[in-house]
Length: 350
Ligand SMILES: [Fe+2]
Image (cartoon, rainbow, N blue to C red; front, side, top):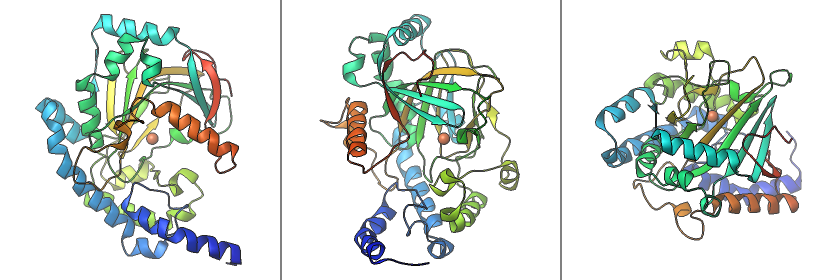
């Protein structure tokens, strides 16, 4: 390997940041030579982060369980997700779906292989005239599920998400491979606005794969040694890919395919293995989507910066503005493209 003076200077300047990221949710092996170091990971750096994050989440979760029915919590602890059919009463769901069908709001789209994901961030300003949607976003019972799955309180980020898959496009969609989003508990939620059939690209989740068993820890440790050099970009960025043989070696069952009727709510810890099921035909899936991912090592559940002014209720706009400013200045090139005001049910723009 050859080092130029510029790269040495750059590395020296970035070194403190790379070290500091050990104590954060940073997960990319390829972008941080400390987190990605084969030697340090052979010595157990990644495994130690994984273990400490797991211990902290187990310390925080009992407090977050107080607002969840014991049976529902026990089921989550076993499988890694909450699943509620008829999540909203029928009138509430019909009103919410109507609002989302009608509204046109600023959106962003991202293409991965033949699949386009569209997100419309639901800031307070946008939902002022969407009372049924706002009621769902503020529902403490829904928040409680997201908090428990994330192992943190705080303000989830909400969006209307549309998945437009076109299998005739040859390029592979990386989301159709089983993967773990990151090395610590993290929550994603989906309220499906339409029926999701088996051939409609449903979510699939490997029950129990959110638990850090000794076998899983050993598997993670082994993967971490070579992750920085993986040809699979998302794997090297810290979203470990798994195949059928991995599941068998880890003593895990095959994924459960979540073909569910409209008005089903799923809240999952996506550190467990999951994927979007490949679809044999062009499909469209529309859902209310939420995510909550916080730094994994804190002993307390509150103190979420995004839940405080001036961020609370404005995150979608602030994030979009920041990303566009960074791209204009040449500091970033994100996969998400702004596509103007669109409806969730329109065809893809990119
Ligand atoms: Fe994922």
